[in-house]
Length: 68
Image 1 (spheres, rainbow, N blue to C red):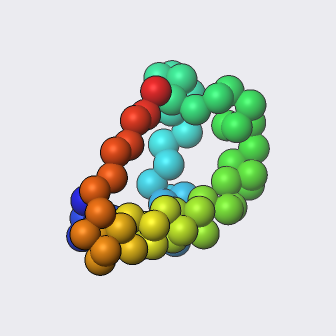
Image 2 (cartoon, rainbow, N blue to C red):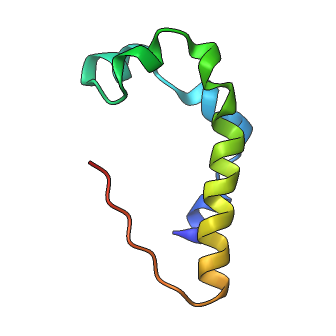
């Protein structure tokens, strides 16, 4: 997973967000989709997430991720 995350450019994430699809599928909390400018932190957050996984892989640690 760490190698796959390295292929994603954090700055491209916002342009890939499909607002209508996310709203229809109720993927995110409703209020978070009211103003897409509130998502400006996403590239930085993803960068931190990617580094976390990369550091774990370098150390030979496994990761468990649960998305509910």
